[in-house]
Amino acid sequence: MGLGVGIFLVAIGAILAFAVNVDTSGAGVNLHTIGLILLAVGVLGCLLSMIFWSSWAGPGYWSRRRSVSGPSGASTTTTTIDQ
Image (cartoon, rainbow, N blue to C red; front, side, top):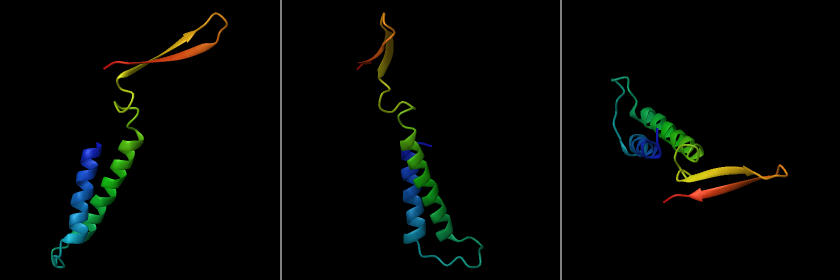
């Protein structure tokens, strides 16, 4: 799930939880509870997407890192940005 899907779930969950006023006592389905569940899943998806963003084609996707060892064994890291 990406950031866009997480934001979409947050929006739909907030609408169902706070903006819909329907009495579904006989149907066995509580739209407010479904809205809160979608809201929680959307927030969790957004947080996980932002945490793992740097490892999945986020910032740094277009850069290459190269480690070079010198004669004394010291290593240096070079970052090249391709655009």
